Amino acid sequence: MKHYEYAYEPVPYNAHAAVLAVAEEHREIIARRAAGGWRYVGLIPTEVSANGCPRKADLVFEREA
Image (cartoon, rainbow, N blue to C red; front, side, top):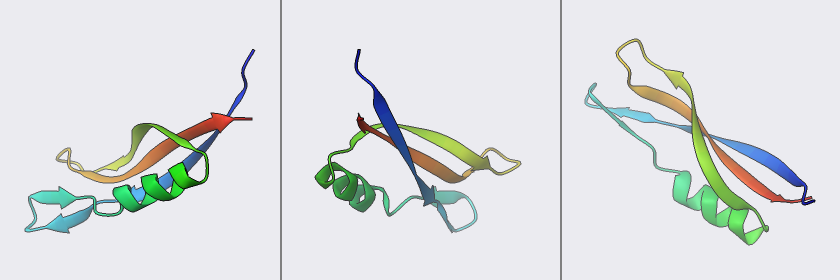
């Protein structure tokens, strides 16, 4: 049976014009983790504003332990 370990990288969303949230660091994080043998498996919102706008999220990575 395969066993995996998981790592989480926080990604902040930067507010633009009060109605738009932009994540800008995700590509660099995914490329860096992939170079280290990790596989991107998903995103978990960790902070959302009262009007439903994402503020922070965790990128989730896995690799065989």
